[in-house]
Amino acid sequence: MKIFLFLFVTLLATCHGDVVSHEHGSTNKIFPLRIKTGPGGHYIPEVSCSSWRLGVETHNVINWKTVPLECETYVGNYMLGDQYRADSKTVNREGYYYAKTLNISGDGKDIWVFDIDETSLSNLPYYAKHGFGVNPYNDTSFNEWVDLGKAPALPESQKLYKKLLSLGVKIVFLTGRPLKQTDITAKNLKLAGYHTWEKLILKDLSIYHGKTAVTYKSSERKKLEKEGYRIIGNVGDQWSDILGTNTGDRTFKLPDPIYYIA
Amino acid sequence: MKIFLFLFVTLLATCHGDVVSHEHGSTNKIFPLRIKTGPGGHYIPEVSCSSWRLGVETHNVINWKTVPLECETYVGNYMLGDQYRADSKTVNREGYYYAKTLNISGDGKDIWVFDIDETSLSNLPYYAKHGFGVNPYNDTSFNEWVDLGKAPALPESQKLYKKLLSLGVKIVFLTGRPLKQTDITAKNLKLAGYHTWEKLILKDLSIYHGKTAVTYKSSERKKLEKEGYRIIGNVGDQWSDILGTNTGDRTFKLPDPIYYIA
Image 1: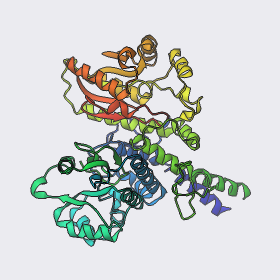
Image 2: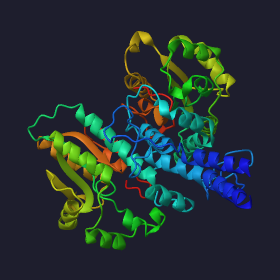
Image 3: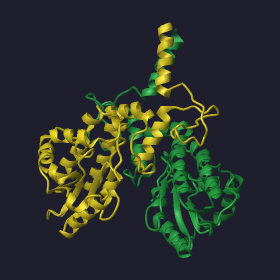
Image 4: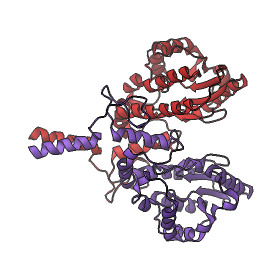
């Protein structure tokens, strides 16, 4: 009996979020996620962190530096659970449904632009050990991870990749990774099952140092179009992958509640 | 003991969605929401409808006609529960945080464009009686509801509206409602607590009949800018409110999983 009571209460807490409520003022700036959800002003992490995540994914919440501390568990559960996978599947599937409706010319000029990190390859093994985006970005430790070349594929993105290839679409990888990571990135892509591409474009810091991702990626996409390529699709986990100019005929935003790149 | 076991199992089912699983093929087109979440291919409405909703809000899922039948309960619970309110609050609060950083000139030319339906006023009383978007749009019954002039305010949007006014920002309502609904719309806005505005723009069908919302709204925003207004913000529940041209300095997308307007 006791164990069932315990399990019941635990499950109730898990299901409805932290049952401990906090009083707060509606204009409280220190805990901007604390939402009044009822007369008592209950703070429910599941509800407010879900709102924060939706705000991030819809580009309402922008220029954020780290995941709110109180959302670490929420984001961790999201990334490791079914929902992240399902959300990724929905986006990539829409990509395929769209691609199927097109007449692919067969001249090799129809391309689909894929971002790499959190789009083609997953850095979840890294972020799972580093607070799921709660900790400030650490260039040194992140690059040590990248240099291992062991990031796994995002399976739903890889399905889209393979289906696009079978439709005759060429793949262009366009990433904010610096040029010096070209070899390890190519190796990692192949190891993860991305065996072919038309181009693999990394960030040339001699041109783009200090420039935003929007500027860099827009400029590189413009070059692609000048070379005669038609960008029929463009997929990334950051809004900076799909905003700006020369964005392609249709863009797809994959989920990423871990970090924000302007 | 038995009652706890029952409660436990019930809660488990509620928490993790329908525990009944359906086998399906991965290319099944009839049930496009059915997601393989494990080796057995379990279909979990909570997970897949949540993915669908995220896909809609992020503009990955577009041009949809009705809410998927299997998501009626999910969408109904969402709209009537804490999450819709919290999600709306997050968006409007970001709007206010942004507006506060601006220098409002005081010349009366800084405007914020508000859409009306599901942005300023809520049609939830109507949709709660009509399947939460599962039923195809019914022009007759919807307009009967509009003509009552009793749509309540969306409280979080109204907070933004009031805060913007206090900052010296002028409000322009820009809606797809037809011109003939001008009087009832003005009356409804006032009844709901929106007492003042710079302009209330409804769709002139002699100009825009058959045109998309993106075209109509872009064109009207362009006119505003030609009149010397600066659109410092623009908020709507549809992507067609904030895409196109002359979109404003920053746009905000409110949640709406009930209907899609191109």
